[in-house]
Amino acid sequence: MEPSSPPSLPPTPPTDTAPPAQPLPRGVYVPMPAFFTPSDTIDIPATQRHTARLLAAGVTGLVVHGSNGEAVHLSRRERRAVVDAVADTVRHETDSLHTPVPVVAGCSAQSVRETVELCHEAREAGATHALVLPPGYYRGLMDADGVAGYFEQVARRSPLPLVVYNYPAAANGVDLDSDVLLRLAGNPRIVGVKLTCGNTGKLARLVEGAPRVRGQHGGKGDFFVGGGSADFILQGLIVGAHGTISGFANLAPRACVRIGELFEEGRVDEARELQHEVAKGDWLAIRYGFLGVKAAMPIFHGPAEASCAVPRLPFNRLEEDGEAVREIREGMAGVLEAEKRLAEEAVGGK
Image (tube, rainbow, N blue to C red; front, side, top):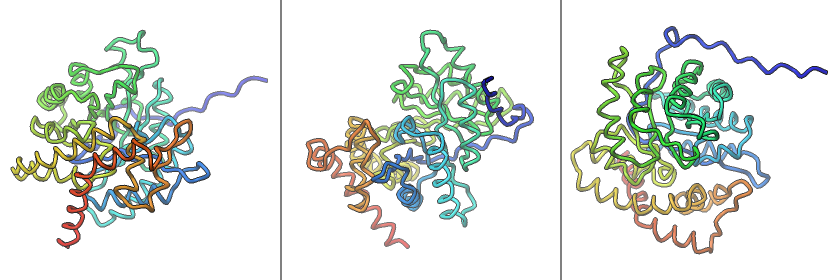
């Protein structure tokens, strides 16, 4: 019996005839966790409940299937279900808004073909952009030109505009420098970068150079440059960042948004004070990774979210009475109080 032919991809128009890529607006983007039921299926109600919570807090956009979202633990069908649940909630919660809320889906794979397939599936489920890591499995066989070529080929074939995800720890140590990222910024189908490398010097070079590079290719200066951690939101804004894509914003979305608002209002001292509390809390989220973020969900959002603290095997949840959760509870106490205060102010201001 002959093997069946692989499925063909939907035709993708050439870059020069594709619709213009929608830029990412400035602001706070939240890489959501994956939520599971006790029977280890995707918890759609919890996913939609958290989506609505984040939108009510004033975030600019949502990200699914990043490293914080256990993308590597999900099947293709589960990935699609999560995107669909988030996109449906966004449509329901923001139907009166004139500005659409971006839904950025992680679509990382090791080959151009599979990455493009994931982009098509994400678009069909309602995503507006694709977040893509550099391929790192064969790192030793791929130089900087090869990595840049990978993104350029995906961008040409993908129905979604791309956001480059520079996270060396998740890409076998591949760390894109500012020269490569500026080359990619010249592609009209690549609209931004998430710098989880934490390099604020690189961030500053991209903020300065991307508009010039895009202008040379006939485009506008609408290339989103954002840090990938909440512990340097203000530092990034000072050198011109357009926002942040931070997992800690799952816990303290209002505090993360407020740092940007204070900075824009020229109230830098207040922004600095709030950044200090966010940085202390985020350090624990960084240390414990997505397990720490999930463990803190009921701490920040109430005991009804206890099920949201459960990861997928082979990982186990952090024990509620264990040392890690006690440390998280104590270390995040300051930003928790700030988040509660901001929520109360929002209610009082209505």
